[in-house]
Image (cartoon, rainbow, N blue to C red):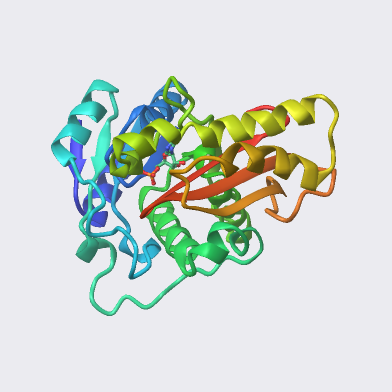
Amino acid sequence: MRRIETVAALRRYIAAAPRPIGLVPTMGALHAGHISLVDAARDDCRTVVVSIFVNPTQFAADEDLAQYPRPIDRDLAMLRDSVADAAFTPDAAEMYPPGFATTIAVGGPALPLEGAMRPGHFAGVATVVAKLLLAAAPDRAYFGQKDGQQVAVVRRLVRDLHIPVDIVVGPTVREPDGLAMSSRNVYLSPDQRAAAPAVHRGLLAARRRYVAGERDRAALEAACGQALAGVREITRIDYVALVDADTMAPWEGAGRPMLAVAVRMGATRLIDNLLLDGD
Ligand code: AMP
């Protein structure tokens, strides 16, 4: 596996690589969720490039940029094992050289939920994803349903800017007890970790109501909220929102209903979602 650290070297590599090329953008601290996307790319593509870049512009000043785990040697070993062809591991100065002054602001699906809780987050995401797509020029780019709003934002970005890439979405990979895998799960204390599957239980409770025929948005949100309400380790519920999976607007009965949840356990935020029609 090649390790590539500059955009110029990535372009040279891409120019000679057999197509189709698949790109899996990540922030590292890889787990089975990321590897499922690498596996999907491996199945579809002749060249698989995985980027590892903890993107500073998608973190607010009070967020966990400094503490975000960066086990680069372990990540590279996992990518070797999953037979990726190249790891693109630029540093912040390579991606954002002095004088960098361009930001892509997505409206629409980027505005509610995480967009409201984390101002500037999706501008950082959209800007770095656009840069990665322009640098790697992949035929396909792979994202996880775990970050369902990010999927909607990236799809809109690619459509609005006519970026010639297919966006492929992989299902959320979970721990055996239902907790969605996340690089941030290492922040949880043992008690918080034991309580964290409540989020998935809430999502499943709402899905059961949906499958039984419930179509009232408030009732479906409440079914999930009830499962979270009694959990002492959940110190705040940021939102429980049933939205249209493509627009992120409140679900009105058409389109694909996505139930999105964000909770805090002390300083750690957990986000998760379920497509009620099936993942
Ligand atoms: P991150 O490193 O958190 O930026 O995630 C990189 C990619 O992996 C994103 O497209 C995520 O949605 C995806 N991802 C993260 N966790 C999971 C998971 N548990 N299951 C599937 N995909 C995931």
